[in-house]
Image: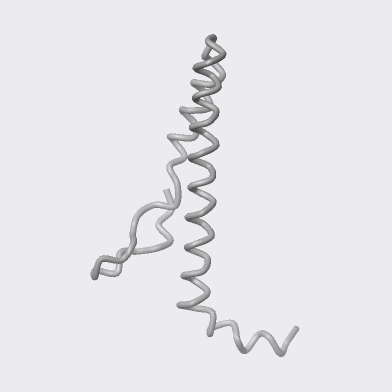
Length: 79
């Protein structure tokens, strides 16, 4: 798991980008499940996990742009 948003020590967010094991296990459970209702529930959960991960990536990208975006200002003229 990749830590792209370190804890700032003052109550900021920290942690891992996503839980690949959770996604992997959900996929395996979906494939192995024989009950269609249970499969649908697991699939809904997988969708929710992926959507949450996408939101985390979006928020972390915004954080990185705000914190380090100035480092790329000199590259704008070179393009």
